[in-house]
Length: 167
Ligand SMILES: *[C@@H]1O[C@H](CO)[C@@H](O)[C@H](O)[C@H]1NC(C)=O
Image (cartoon, rainbow, N blue to C red; front, side, top):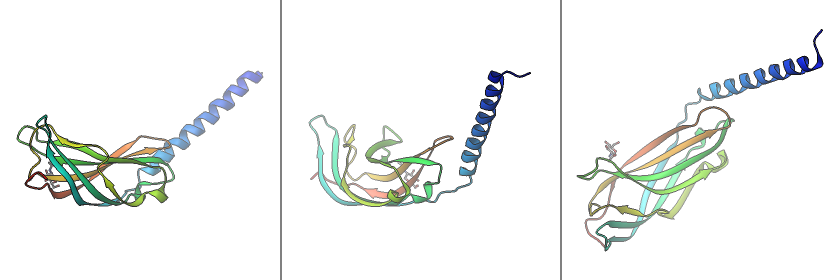
């Protein structure tokens, strides 16, 4: 004695349950993928290195970023947001993080790349701390899945150093 409405509703609920289950399995199997991205960054040139009138240091560099992030892509990956940051410590702050470049990788085919670029965002220190400063380049990524939780990770590329004097 079930009405049409009841049947339609039951069918809808059933379909929705299947869909939810498929999404859960999708994000679950995705977790089994253990990505192994690689990256290499080189400073090709220090184009400008100055103390500004505000007293803050600013450096402009040309960098070569090579990376292979293809292993981050699974069939459940929508896109990957990636950014390169310079990380260093000063007497005042144990961690200073300056974003230098970023990009969105829409597909696996684009995840292996090599680009030469000037820093897209300004590399400014709030103070006069950049001369002879040791720093790390870190490549961060945020993986946006089609379904499931976003996840983020990074690669630390240590051993960079800024010049001793302004130029
Ligand atoms: C730079 O990387 C090295 C090695 O991973 C680490 O020991 C150090 O703390 C890092 N420096 C900063 C400022 O994050």
